[in-house]
Image (cartoon, rainbow, N blue to C red; front, side, top):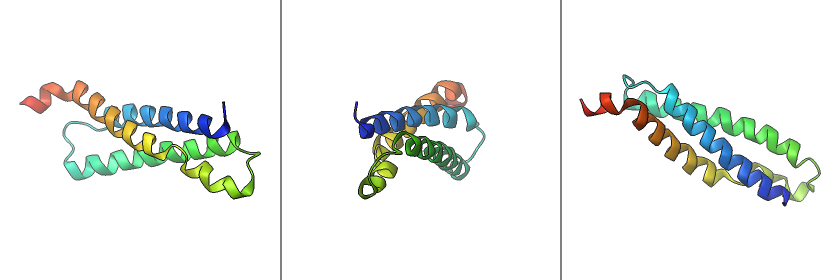
Length: 99
């Protein structure tokens, strides 16, 4: 597998993990603003962790492709973060959402 394919799939898995954590961390009593800020902060923590891991994976990449190491897989990260956050949050708090 290519280095950039590994980065892509690693970021996708990091997005899934971040979405699960964000869905668990956000309690039902939070207002919308606090929930959004919490989700963004969880996403940033996981993305920066994936950035550090990605730099280790791609340590032998030429300098002209260094920017691609930071941006490869960012779209699946964001969409999987949102998807899994919504699924986990809804599954955990469905009784308090209906009332």
